[in-house]
Length: 470
Image 1 (cartoon, rainbow, N blue to C red):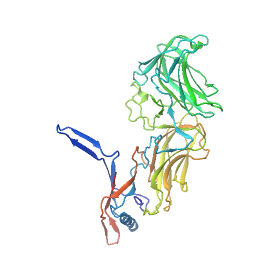
Image 2: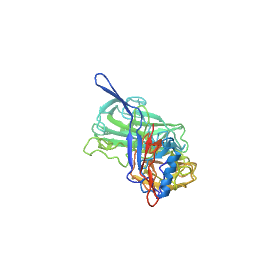
Image 3: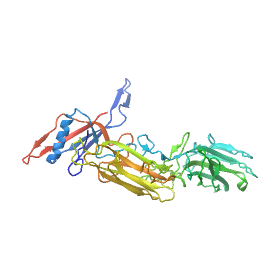
Image 4: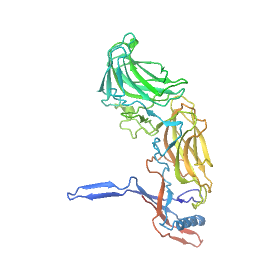
């Protein structure tokens, strides 16, 4: 069973509502008076003091019957915290708690060692000329750290194309676009080229001539595959040919290969591809006078949003099922449960892009949906549903659809801040990780319940305390 019990107004609690969080910490003191401590539980345990004064007769009776059914402390039940986000891992959509459709993935920077171009899988090749010499940690990077690599090109003539390159294995589709971006500069002025290629037979994007100065600039090149992408290899190249053939020292940092037609916020990688870290609605850059300001040094928050990639036009969905029954059968509810789902969406590249967003039960018997039209700015969208009291299915947070062509293939956008709450309105976003607002092992803290009858024969319950157990 589960609670809190809905009141006749649709509210789930009365003010004041007390809540505590507690850890179980064990301390060991040694003879030299030093202390060693460790936590016995991974997440805090909650307790709630519910104010039950001034209930109607039927509301009071519901609580009394529920207390009796639980035999006081005797039986556990599920408690949905009215203060909290009911979802877990509300920003880490790559976590297994989120079910992803076969047509959706969480976008990454697919280039490894994005700041050290001297190590594998980066390769330096002469291609008929002299291979560039790569020196790591040679220059101060745009983020203010000494992590930029030096690429010393000896020059190119005729058909020579000396290059520094990396190949990545990525799922491809017809008409799929990939973008390579990197920060480059030189000692004074000069030019270098970048290009993206891949597939079988080989497809080559338009090479971009990068006019370098002694100031950092971010350059990008893209490749859109045709109807036969072939194998799943995408290669990025920093190279010379005879058109930019003079010897030059190029400083390079922040290499990124991603889905989409425009570069996203840079995400560092080392030995593995890493989910893109996108500036969310709450992210604030450092003061512009500081080195690396755009990378969030001294920012109040890290970049927490994610890139969503539709690699097909069906089964493009992301959902989380809550351990919370939608209706009230056997749960002593006086009406159906109202749930509001909300999240932030943002367009990547050109539009229009629209995304279906739903609140529903896990069999789609009852649902409510909206269509979110994405823009170049963050938009928070919400959708609410009131379930029937007899609905015995679980509640779900969903965007996208299963088996329906609504989100076009090769669509990319940004997503942040999933929230589900027992309410008909949206409240301030609350970040959760492993814990959530649905607590599945709770008990009353006492085997006693205090209630009385006044002259109007109304039952007055003073307070019930609910305790979560590990």
